[in-house]
Length: 353
Picture (cartoon, rainbow, N blue to C red):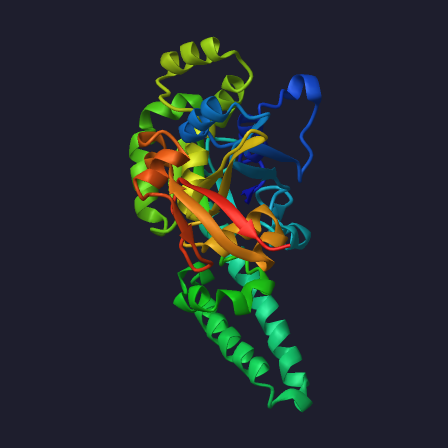
């Protein structure tokens, strides 16, 4: 899952990227737009299974975060849209929007900054849809093509929704017809999270600011607050030093851990597990995926040649001391391709040659 860190110029995107990646700017130089960091998702279940199987390798579920150039170019008084960046963002799974709450010589308006970015996404999607509808209209010889006509109807509904200033992630049609529209990679369709980046001295007032932001932003946009400058410093010190600094500044959890949790909830992610002497691994998937779809995340051949999935719930595996105990208790199951995988399922995929 790729999460792009976005925002207007000088909002603290790169500093947040440093906090997530642990990059030391002083020793490694500037972070280039497009840089990606991989974040392992802590999982106590996987830790326990690793102790049991003692595999050669343990692989945690991972989230990728990308630093990006500003969506709007120029200085704060004369910004223009960055179309190249908007195009690149279409390949993201979700956005992490950084909203400035510190004085850099211009008005502090995090709510206004959110609406600016949201409007850019809406306008970009409208332009994309209008261009496609023009192409459909020019294909006179294909007017009787039912798939083309279905696409036209769906796009017109999307365009009407966008014309009302509403992002596509609030349109039920998108969820119902996601596969038919997937190739468009609409920007306003993608989930968005927001992080208020505040100056250290503004810490005491952030509880109230955060409450106001949660009221001002749409309900489907979760909001967190952090001082990215302080968090970037925390990411560079030893665990003992980090604990001391966190206690000093009243930080109960690092932004890295909060972003992991926020991303998992926003993207609707769960993990299934695979175990063995070679590898114990957590595989992140969308909640609601079938066993066949989950198998496909391991290897595309497993999707195409799927037969069955040997399935045991993690809690049952621990309670009954492994696969043998689960079989004896009737908790080891063979599931077909339509089985909906649950968080913590331990799967062994059976696939044909």
